[in-house]
Length: 406
Ligand SMILES: Nc1nc2c(c(=O)[nH]1)N[C@H]1C(S)=C(S)[C@@H](COP(=O)(O)O)O[C@H]1N2
Ligand SMILES: [Mo]
Image (cartoon, rainbow, N blue to C red):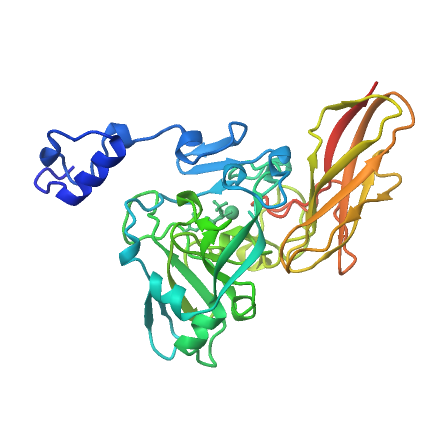
């Protein structure tokens, strides 16, 4: 703690405002010191979360939803998973926030203020599905290290912003461009200012899609602090790690971006299937691009009870990375037979799709309802956990709920 530099008057006033009282000896407070009253440790209050959200890690915060919390058509802040790799930025002054576009493949480096971005480019709103590459990791055996996500590291919120392609067009991109990489304002967990916690990216073909947004609103309001306030890259349908929160820079690269968590084995899976537990060489891994087809039953909760003769109405969402879901089915006999659900069209490309079905059960007893989505390439979800991989990515097994008929 540096005792010689004292806190600036302006930030003292801000802190006093939040605490709701003057900090009497504030002028004696060391710089970067966080008053206890501001060291909020209850994530539910801190992030405004539903009380049923599940905390997997508190340093950094990693919090997931339960399936039934994702029942809304558009995910609200209180039910949205949080995945942080480092320490989110504090005391953000949006009047000073900028986005700098640089890299080997820009005509010239260019910096925009937040208000320039908002006024210079046309704004678009899309619902975009964002799923962590490690969603479902908890089911792999042998277990993979990392957050033990079950099913809840996925969201589909409504994002408003400007198209990355319009910004890149304004900057001017050289023919040599192959990849973009994002830079953000969060700090490495070690607090080492020379290290980025995460700096990932996507190939130009994804960067230039209409739906790839540099967003400043989520669900019609400022992006919540945990989800990237005041600016975020959103690449729907790809591993959520490509959607950089607290965005302040984009490098247009003449090679695959090599920022933090771009190198193997991060966000990579074996090129060919491997025996569970096997060591895989870096050069035998490939980077995850579009996420696989998947679905979630969001109503009812697992463990539902129903009277014999009554219909059970199930519902949920299905998504398939870059592709559309063309078929949604359910099974009540452990996958022996399948029946169609109704599945809606997406409101826009890369938004999850809603499904529902009315199920009749033949007699009293225990059942499981399994749900299975099929994408536009006719690829269906596997019934059980798919290909084991060292980091536990891409588990898109059918979601199941237990039902008792009495
Ligand atoms: N700057 C920054 N962006 C980030 C991350 C991060 O730690 N820092 N985590 C990434 C990962 S791994 C995921 S899964 C998503 C999570 O987004 P959410 O917390 O808004 O749900 O943000 C991505 N973007
Ligand atoms: Mo992630």
